[in-house]
Structures are given as structure tokens and as C-alpha cells.
Length: 67
Image 1: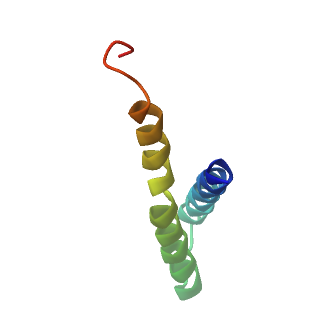
Image 2: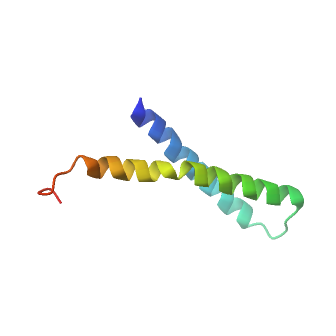
């Protein structure tokens, strides 16, 4: 179950990053697009922690000899 939850978080972070990239590439901005940009950025920041968790769990199981 933990692998599935982390996969969902990683996919969510990727989706938020893609949405953020598309919104930033616009040439004209409105109040609505600024709200969407802020929302995408917040979603990315919330879900980016999944990358740290995956990295930590990978190294938590290694021994000094394996490094």
C-alpha cells in the first residue's frame, strides 16, 4: 500500500509541475490564470516531499559497505 501511495504522490507532483510549466509559458495573464498558477505551485510543493521519502527509504536499507 505504501508503494501505491508514493506512486500517486510522485504522479501528482509530475502533473502539478506540468500544469505549472504550461501556465508559466502563457504570454498573457489574468487574475484567473494567476490563481491557477498559485494553485499548481502549491500542489507541487505539497507533493514534492514524496521524492524525499522515496530517496530516504532507498538509502535507509543500505549498509556502510554498500555505499
